[in-house]
Image 1: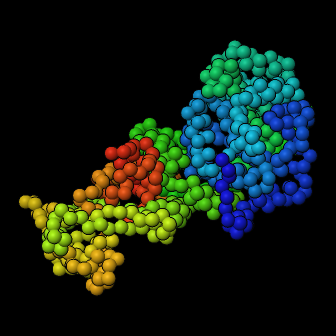
Image 2 (image 1 turned 45 degrees about the vertical axis):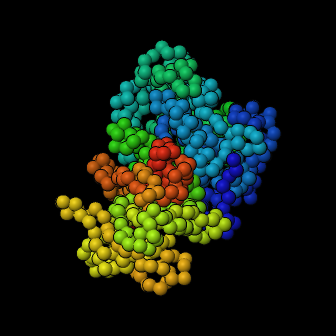
Image 3 (image 1 turned 30 degrees about the vertical axis):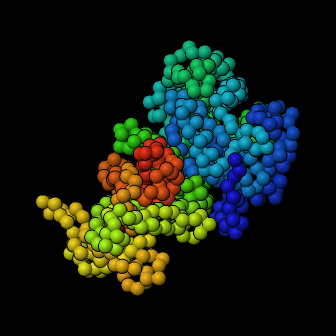
Length: 598
């Protein structure tokens, strides 16, 4: 699998709105990444010292925790890390930050790998895989923790969580030293080994760094390094009953993998001093190789009308507000793929947002704009009637000599790609049209079917509406019209009669009945959880509607995941799960223009 390519001019334009590019170019020019050795696999200082000069000019990483499905917000980090590595002769690692066994599962590992690949990125370079797991470094992390204890830089704290919280202080009040902070290294080491050996209950004690309880940065007030947690890990099983904290594990993972530019979102900015403190302490002890990684923070990209909190997404799934993680209304990448979004559109959108030091909101319609631009050139056209109303052509036998005659019609597969050929269908005495294409009493400006008005049936004939049929309740059951002779599209008489209205249709005799799922945004508010609001209160009750539609015969045997433009309606995709021969199911991806709330 190769990395996605962009037009050179577009690449140059994107460079100008990404401050990280300037940092990388500065570092490369200064030679800050030169002379690094890499032994081919992650490891400590001695391991890499025995290796060769690193062939990668830079190393980045995408480090998801496998505790849920990736969402649209992750797409920016994926494209940023893999894209920068590609553009600067580097390598990007896919690393699973799997240090929390209670929430992580193999299911999520597999799903994350699938979605990174779907976006077009590859963690194999030169035949070598750069897929790593933080849990494979647990032995080194434990060794690093013992080193910190021996150096008097860490201690075992046996305060209760409530006591630790109270003694931590706040932004205006310095913290208070733990009564266990003054323990000697030998005693701390013994207690830590007791933690490792399962001699204490979950939560009974933790290992903390000894830094500064009066630091104005609360993250430097003796942060936790290890906790006791009896839980089966998806990768290491029951080998460990103590697990490293994320803030301890993450910098170590970067260093073991020889990451040069550790890119993360702004909420980790206050963690950078501890990141640097830890790595420098371990490098001073000869455990980690220099030069060390450096952390850089960038602003999050937020999309309107969605929530991206994993907890809230899980709540939507667990409480069955949606039909699973891949529900087409979900902002998860698996949901967006099933909806019909293309990786090209997602990449184009996240790249266009740039990389800044501020968080940004982007309206969902922007993503749909990139999607339309991508699909317009790719998607074959087809006719579909979503809210069918029967049209009876009362003079059909007179025009064609028999009701059994079928008049052959055709249309291009794609209007701008004649090499794709034409699709064939036929005109018969009864057709399906959209219910909105008839009004018994038209409103001002209405140009479609109403008694006495002439309208063109696209790719077919001009007809004149003569009335309608109704049931006993007064509901319209069929529209009546007569064919205007010699007006078939593509024939010399086609332009003899000028009409203002053109409508799409499907022949009753050959229509394919299909389930069509019409999706809209899941929430009615741009920021569903703003200000602590219960996001469930603004669920859009009209976010999903299922109709039985009629499709032209060319769609009788299309494969799942095939995308089309249903003329006049928008873009649709054959559902990748439920669509099957004889039982077609299509999802609406997006309309031909943004119409939400209009």
